[in-house]
Length: 140
Figure 1 (tube, rainbow, N blue to C red):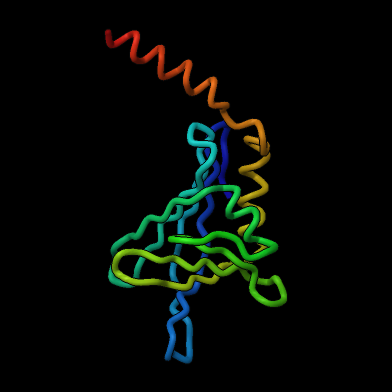
Figure 2 (cartoon, helix red, strand yellow):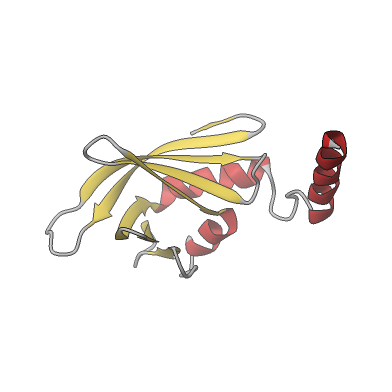
């Protein structure tokens, strides 16, 4: 786990669960949280043939899904029975995937992200609007 005043990163081993296979496919993943984008978590999955697949979703969705099923649409997150793992159900244009990640290292990553930017202290819409106004005024 690495972190500084603005970013938190973690490299986690995950497992791709494939229907019909009697074993999981291990994948490496890089998780990142940036205080400059305080509502999002980004995950890069390193696929077996060398490519990388990036997924981004709400930090709050991840927090909710650690303990109870959460989400709909492209990303669903739920604890596995026994709470030793968390399941990510990812639905994209080319299909769906189920990824299992250890609950403890994922919780450690998430706790560190919340330590950097506590829930509720993300930029407010007023701050964002003021920033946008200053950018547009500078461009005029």
